[in-house]
Length: 113
Length: 119
Image (cartoon, rainbow over all chains, first blue to last red; front, side, top):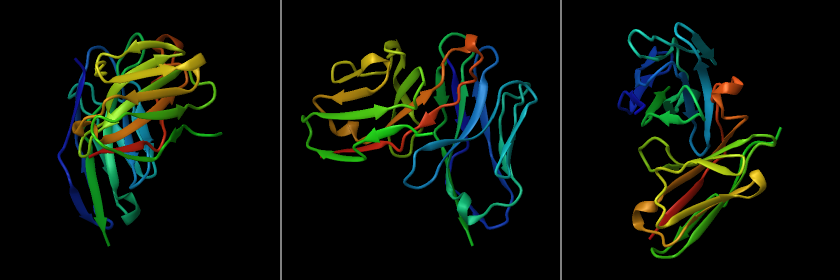
């Protein structure tokens, strides 16, 4: 079946540090890939997405590139802010039929001033 | 545009009691999902509706959980009787079409969730 594996958290960084959160997936075909973010006390919201190999999704300074050869979709940001503190979920939407979205376990990011 | 609405936001019950959660998806969204998110884990799909039909309920504990989507709009998720391990946040999400043949790429829109504590 489809699955998503992301790095364990929590991740604690100082403000303006570089962020990488690793995500790898297992799926048949060519899924769409997503990063969702969950701020404290809020629901999940889409951060960025990529729908085919070599696509780069970007939003709010975050980027992730769909790498089919390594089945990865790592999230990066060059300079994190305190306001980026949240839980980040990698997810995939399976190709074909009715979409089923599978989530990773989430990585908590804490940015300290 | 109004987002996905859920209620109640919080619920505390004793084990063996029952509880119901309500969800109103974004207008026009054909697909509705209920996820269970246990603390420290990712969301787990319980049930997926396409309009008012069920397309996936393989992970729904059918001996205690039930869900319906009346007229292809609002949905209710019920737990009866509740167990301690049901303590979680229940997330409702919707998407426009939910079908790859339509070109929809699968973005989900989530509500704020309903946090259930079973004592």
